[in-house]
Amino acid sequence: MTEQNYHFGIRVNLQQFVHQLWQVLLVGLTLGMMRTVVPALAESEFGVPKGSFLLLMAFVIAFGFVKGALNFVAGRLSERIGRKHVLMLGWLIALPIPAIVFYAPGWNWIVFATILLGVNQGLTWSMTQTAKLDITHPEQRGLTIGLNEFSGYFGVALAGIVTAYLTEWLGAREGLMWFGMVTIIAAIITTQLWVKDTLAWAQAEAKQHAAGEATGPIARFPKNISDTPTTWQVFTLMSWRDKRMFAFSQAGLVEKFVDALIWVFYPVYLYEQGLSLANIGWVVGIYGFVWGGSQFITGKLSDHVGRLWPIIIGMWVCGAGVGLMLLGESLWWWSISAAITGLGMALLYPNISAAVSDIAHPAWRGSAIGIYRFWRDLGYGIGALLLGLASNISGIISTGFWFVTIAMFISGLLVLLVAEETHPRINPAIE
Figure 1 (tube, rainbow, N blue to C red):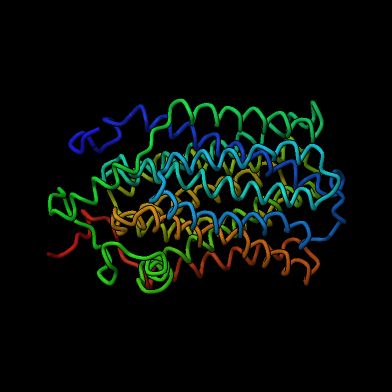
Figure 2: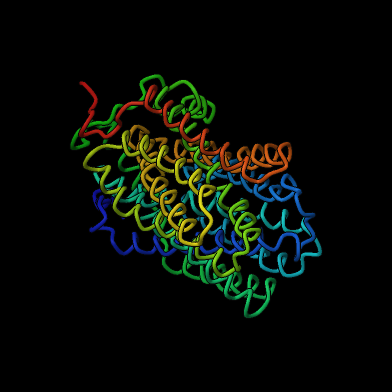
């Protein structure tokens, strides 16, 4: 393919865009199969002692640290060997997960399966997002990431509900094994047949910027970094040297406290309140469906109104939804609280990624996204560790809920004080 054939935009690359949406749906299904049944049945099926909050959180701690590290690796690796190769590697690593869950004699096997899941998610989800950003227009980044996360978290929610019903029908281990095997094998086959590598689009865009041929408003790219930065230079820029990137990275890390809480504590808390597995699947699923479905709107909204305020408001709404969960005692109340949390997540989640993409130069955008996702998904591990410790010390599960609520409000305030609008049309670079 010659360089002049690299056109940008969703419509002109629609076929490949749809293939990538299918891939992230499968990524979400793979993650979702471990989210409802496994925590709820940790005591009865996998031998976790009642009240062992830190042990219960062990598999999410492992997942967070592994996925965070692999996000870091995936972004940098994809700039060397291409997006498709990294995607395929992630799917191949996931192959043993269903069998490990099926034969698991104890909780340590579940932790190991979740480590493999973290590797899979770090490689695959990063690539679906990066690949779509490669082939779309800068004015479509909010919509692009919104669609990406909509598809992925729709898959997470759907898997949580389907596996809950499969567990009641086939049993926990059999249901998870068959669901996981079908999903992962379908992903490997469709990746091989239909996914194209998009690295060349990113390279063509970088050449346009270097030649001064980029059209439209130019983003406020960081100035204190070279055109071909080292991994350490990008890491330090994302982590503390650029105050905007620091604000977005810490917000990404803290918002994962919410997802760690919902992954483990929501099923356990609701199971203790007497809800059936199917109803737990629906409450957690409502959070996922609202989060996923609303991102189609909130991502596109940020292309018009900017990224900053949707992020800040989303952090506060999400935190409020978590706190509300403890203030009522009915299925309807818990469902509404979960929906509010999902709405807040929909406002912040795609738009932090869009903000990072706005001000990351195309020459090192893959690395920037990978490092942002490193910090964001490290929040699973750090959040799960802090939640487990807080609840172990207090002896009650509700402590974790209030901890997350407070953390989300403080993090949103930090974004307000430190960050700025990144949309290149609303706040363009001054030549």
